[in-house]
Structures are given as structure tokens and as C-alpha cells.
Length: 161
Image 1 (spheres, rainbow, N blue to C red):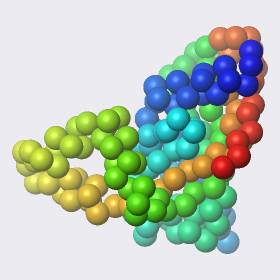
Image 2 (image 1 turned 90 degrees about the horizontal axis):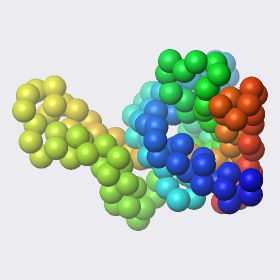
Image 3 (image 1 turned 90 degrees about the vertical axis):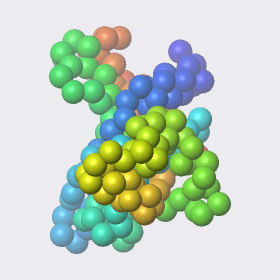
Image 4 (image 1 turned 180 degrees about the horizontal axis):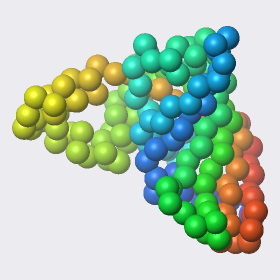
């Protein structure tokens, strides 16, 4: 398989899933948090998170993170998932519109909730989503683990941004 094939497989895997678990670290120790994400053609991941959360406070102090993406309930014979190392930064204002379009394409219910909130909880969700900034996870290394190709099969790529 070529590097281009590996990148395409990872791109398709990212597109097929929606939750990344971010692992951050601070003087208080390691922390993990799951967030919804969308990815782009360059394999960058974008997510929304309240800057006051512990993981975002950690990331603001130390933008280096580890992350995983996987489906729940997999049998060991077909276990498949991603491990990533990279850096998180807040999305620049000039990129927010593009990232928001990607996000709403993957999570169209958010657009519906924003325009047609049917109850108090939906209105709260819509307001929080609107106010919450986007962050970018720029992977520098990705490992695809795919036991369907053979037990312990791993493909690794390095990325430059």
C-alpha cells in the first residue's frame, strides 16, 4: 500500500466516525475528554469545546495532545481505530466560517436546532454551540490499527503542517 492509500484510508475512517477522545496533560496530571469532531482533506480535526473545561485549560497551557478515534463494541478480530499525536490551537476567525460549514455538514441536526428549537433544552444547546469556539487538532503522527487486515496490523503516517 502507498502512503497515498494510507492517507485515504485514514481520511475515510475519520469521515465515518464522529467522536475523538483527547488526552491532555497539566501539572495536575493527565486528562481525557471526548468531543465531536469533523475532519478536513488534510486530516486536521476540528471540534468545539468550552475554553473553561479542564481539557481546554490544559491545552491552552500545553497544546501537545494525544487522541484516539474508534467505534464502540468491536470484536477483537475486527478492531479498528486511530491513535494520533498532535497540537491543538483555536481556529482563526477567518477560518471559522469554513470550519462551521464542515461541522454542519457532518452534524446537520445542529443547524436544525439553531433554526427551529422545539424546546428549552434545544434552545440552550443552540446557544452554547453558537458561542463555543472551534479548535483544530493538527496531527503530526497517525497510526491506523486494523485487526481485520491481520492481528496487530498497524499503518503509521507522519504529517507536516
